[in-house]
Length: 407
Image (tube, rainbow, N blue to C red; front, side, top):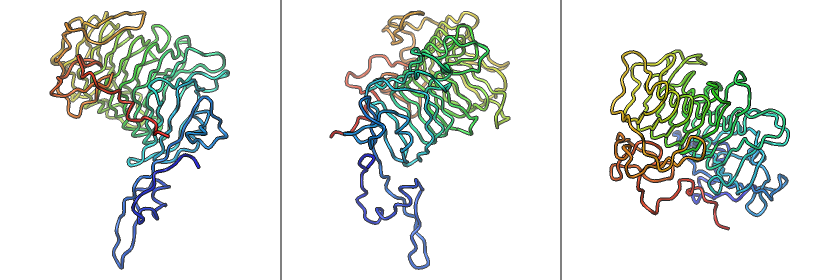
């Protein structure tokens, strides 16, 4: 057996295996001349991957798989794949669809403990290529610095599916020494090319992406509707956060972007399916500091885009470049007051007690926690940037909700 599923307590639902196993929304039961729609209880299954496992194993906690790729071949809607700390070969694709009620979850059992690195002879341009829908990718480290031979990675986590969530990952050292004229790439990409839509990129650490001074490689790249919240992004050759193609209705809130070609680019063009341009996008509560360009619009953009309560400062070419008639509101133009900032080493983007970003953010409905999992609320106040100042001492990291079950 591939893990131990939770059995539904209701015997009526237990016989509805067609809905549960096939991931359908429900089954119809006839009673006389009437029909009833019965929504089945989700049967969740756990699979396990560990460095000491084998792909010939059944994938249980006692006999785990060796590779994430093998687990991806056997997942079904409602499966959670727990990946133990250790090093794993990247260059794989995940294709299976979950559903809104039965998501497929790939999670590192310790935040950034499961590290994905290039294989000895790389044959793909992405570390992780996800094409499935209703999939979560949570808590992994993707490290492209250990390249040995073959195809160099242009993307860390590439997502072409719909309703997917990429959370709390550490993606770094991707495409640093490729030719600039090579096909573009990103640390994390949420793309509409395969008709994907409605993605989430939340609480990730993305840095050192793309060759120097090359505008085709980005930190977080979005070409559809999405939420981009509480990410830390720095040392990107192109834009820290870049919207293009069919991007629209994107929520970019509470991120910190630094030392990149551009901080945040809001644009639309070279359309895949849409002709409307980028409209109804909100850029709020972000710190955009010490880039070449700060926040700018490019291509086709709409009049309903909003830029509110951002800290934008010391971007050498320009802090702002919006379409004629577009304005930004509540902007702070001052040094953000990080605890320990460096352009070349690992910066500490947490806010010092003197930071002008503290308490100056816009109130957000249904806010995400900050990068460290600290709450944002009317009670705590809304700070600008990826970090909330002076959190409760007992706040848990968000990835802890996916802790493996005890034996």
